[in-house]
Image (cartoon, rainbow, N blue to C red; front, side, top):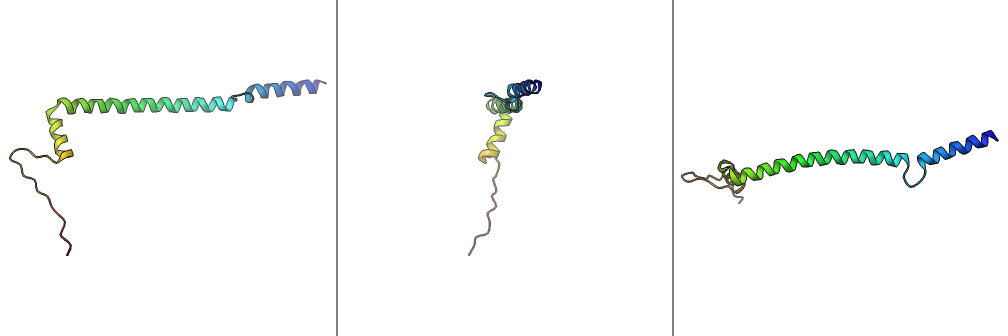
Length: 91
């Protein structure tokens, strides 16, 4: 009889830990997922902050505007010459 009671208690404890809608394993996985997501939020916040700083610099800093115009659009300043090297024509 004592063995049956012990077995019932053990099974009840096992069900309390692993049974039901969410088990201890599910809870542990959810906590790990939450930590990964929180780290990703921090990383993305840093990226957004750096992009906001870059956008402000492009809007307000003439040197940055000139660099972007040269690098992105191939623009040249007054009195400068643009040389393009073309590949040899195929016969």
